[in-house]
Length: 422
Image (cartoon, rainbow, N blue to C red; front, side):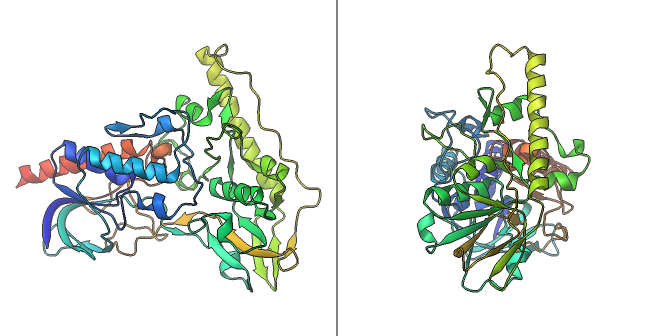
């Protein structure tokens, strides 16, 4: 068993941000990664995926994007390579292909035992940096339904249209993953039906600037969980209905329900149940679409107000807002899967926390890690990279630097206190 001060679990952007700060402080640690650096970006993303955030927002402690296209969007594999360069820039102590099997107290000491398939470590501190994407959520309507010959593929396992059997596709979920996959399938000539649930509609650009520029400039991304009237609801905010696309014909273009409809995608309400060769949908498409539009226009109103107060009116474009979604006069109530025919259901319904190896009293009933500013109830156990961990941008690449800094400050101060007490 190897003894070390701190074990960081996960070598994605959040884990590497923690490692960079610990290295700068001269703090002994190791970063354990089940695959390669940035593994999820390599093996759990579809082939054409690009980041939702523009390149100028790829900011990590001591390392930012310095390429020729700050307003573009890195492809998933390019971002994984970016993380490789980041790790190399400070010689991060990463142990790759080390799958964590158990994290528990190393009784009778105050330290922790981390068991992997490559060995065991004993550490005084643990930082969980495995991200918010634990395991793909299987919608109950699909999990409990009689699907017959229809294939089910999660967004986590989807790669490209050629991967799927010939035939139509029912995509479930209309946040960023769902609309991007539906769009790609429609452009490939597939017949696509999109089952629309709760989503956050936003234009890709507004008044000449990327929407993330406005989210940052207006302070929306910096809002903390303490400012939210309902912390649970805030952490369940859906991802933005956006796509990062660099091609000249698509750069800056919106990707929303209106665009998908224009490309031949049919819209339906939330998937209610599947059985007997049919799929039934809730009669909530109109209410869902109107709720998303109200929130979008409320934010764009706030942007316009910010522009007036800041005197930016002459420096930005005139306000042009996304067109309304034209709802079908008779929303799709049910679908005969074999008559369409639908060969595949793609589930883009989000993820659920999954830490079966974490044998410590720090998880909530839903599996999430209970924390405040990354600090858990177990002394020396921390978490980074969670959705709305403290700031709204905690779940974004750019926001991890704030949570990493808070966690490392607490960890180092704890170690100092322990030494002084000793």
